[in-house]
Amino acid sequence: MRTLVVSDLHIGAGHGRTHLDAPALDALASALEPTDRLVLLGDIVELRERPIQDSLAAAAGVLPQLAACLGPGREVVYMFGNHDHQLRARPAAVAEIEGMLAGGGASVRFAYPGVWLRDDVYAHHGHYLDRHTTTPAFERLAAGAMARMIKLPASAISSWTDYERVLSPIYAWMFAIAENGDGEVDAQEGGASMRLFKRIRSGNWLETFVLEAGVRAVVAALGRLGLGPLTGDLSDAQLTRAALVAYGQVLSTLALEPRYALFGHSHRAGPLPGDDPGEWRTPSGTLLLNTGCWVNERFALTPSSPYRPGFAVELDDEGPPRLVNLLDGRGRR
Image (cartoon, rainbow, N blue to C red; front, side, top):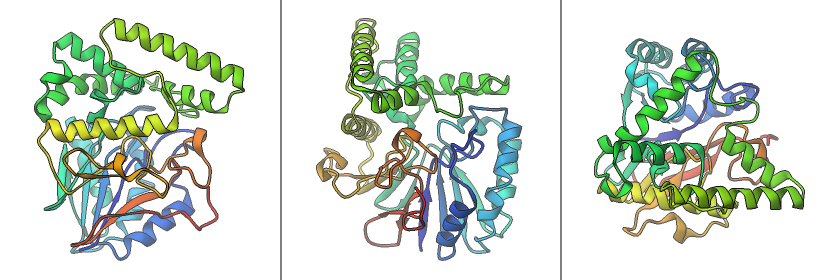
């Protein structure tokens, strides 16, 4: 069986953030032709920038095109992430998405929070890492505040239910904002965290120095409020390392020890050539693979960026999963 795993399509994201234009859809469709199972690993439909019916309308222009490449005897597994988490509470919307994906005759099932793709391969969107990461992004801070409110520190988490107790209220609140017509972010620029990362990377040396000093001061203040541990280091290397360590903590907390673990969420594909292989292996020996994203992260759109769109993971019945970029070599950035 050939499986293709893609995540973070963010269909419905505004102002060109999603990268699913005609050439990208053609590339993804071509990859589906020899595929027996398509796994959509979360954050497929964007529910944080506009009302759900608008996002579903956008999905109706994308998902049926993918479904057309999957005929009878094939399977689609749709997993929920943090940006489409609220679909779980809306069976009518889930049925609508199922109809979009079943048009070619493939069977469709929905899975949460994770799924075993093989006896030795586990897949999960990865959003639970926000409870453990030291990167001071919005959801990490919100998770820390929620944990204090319900008196559930990270050290006390032991189950999926515990993660949901901390994170589900945050997702519901962000969804409610979008439903009222005032989305989470300025869709052209990404969230507040992404805007900050972009300014630090693209500013002159003085602006970068001031912003980094400000981040360190804020992180220190948040630590005094009990929302740590956090770091003021927002370098690419540290962002990558923090996500890997945090997701390793998720697997350890849930007593999961697969040979391979696939996740998305951070939009940073890997491991790639030049990455430290040791950082992509947990203390228990699990090899981590991040499926990357299909959105335009404008702060990192270079031909070699690990944040560039088009990544996916291919998986056969035997052998290691393979990280590929379906858009490389097509004259795209």
